Length: 297
Ligand SMILES: NC(=O)C1=CN([C@@H]2O[C@H](COP(=O)(O)OP(=O)(O)OC[C@H]3O[C@@H](n4cnc5c(N)ncnc54)[C@H](OP(=O)(O)O)[C@@H]3O)[C@@H](O)[C@H]2O)C=CC1
Ligand SMILES: Nc1nc(=O)c2c([nH]1)NC[C@@H]1CN(c3ccc(C(=O)N[C@@H](CCC(=O)O)C(=O)O)cc3)C=[N+]21
Image (tube, rainbow, N blue to C red; front, top):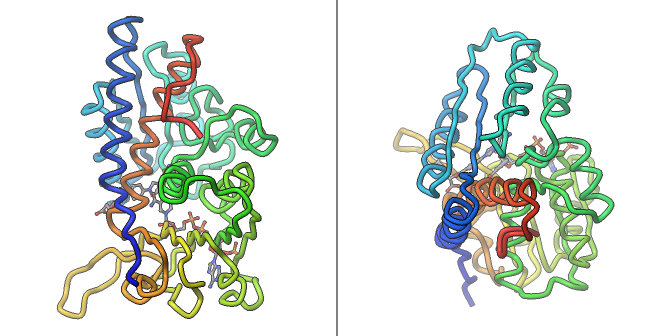
């Protein structure tokens, strides 16, 4: 039996419709338009593509979008000053500093400077701590998007064996926290994991967030497992040019998995939809309104 394809692009469109409906309500009933500021330091062609698509999606949802493109040589002090301004700006509800930042800037210091209430990436240590202790937090967009797709596909995740490959602060660790919160039995694997294929074979849910093209193959997958591919890798095509592939060998794994997300068209579009969702959530929390339905974990 071939795997069900989890259509992240279509699901993201639904989430964005929900976002738009909440935005309309905020504007009409409260006179407030949610605003998102994205800060990009230096020239990185891939990042510029993401920043552009984030801005477009933000405007399409009826929200205010502000983009700050800073020179690669911008000092840490100038970046911190800009973040201070955005923290104080009443029209801005969400702030995202595109990572990575150039080497002369301390990313931890920058993330710590963002008002936790406006931290729509969920990277501020206070949001990390709130999530880790099961309290109301801003949840990182990529893991949140993965969780939404898993719940949609599987219903309750309670009792399931989940293996997350990758332990980064932006994907692997928060993903594991969310799965734990949904009562999965969670394993986090990484570059030092012994017998990675054997560990992954236990999983009902596999989330691959490594950055290695086509690493996960069908022999690693328990038949029927749900596979979420976070990886975004650009590789050379034999005939020239490049294409995007995930961390999962899609054609191969689709033969044994129960369900699988494609790359592109899987986790990526959900990440952007969740960024918009988090901006609306931040706006609702600031106004003291109820949590926006269908947008939070
Ligand atoms: N779709 C989306 O919206 C997003 C996609 N991404 C993509 O997801 C991928 C992961 O991103 P990110 O978490 O930032 O990456 P990092 O490089 O920060 O982390 C990668 C993780 O993979 C682990 N790893 C590396 N090699 C192996 C290996 N051979 N076996 C097992 N584990 C390994 C590393 O282990 P160790 O800690 O031991 O070094 C590390 O924990 C990338 O392709 C990135 O482009 C990222 C963010 C959003
Ligand atoms: N502070 C911060 N927050 C982030 O969330 C963040 C970041 N920095 N730095 C870089 C990574 C990467 N990331 C992606 C978002 C969308 C797609 C996406 O929409 N991808 C499309 C394909 C896009 C294409 O064709 O290039 C897809 O998978 O279908 C991919 C990757 C967010 N990141």
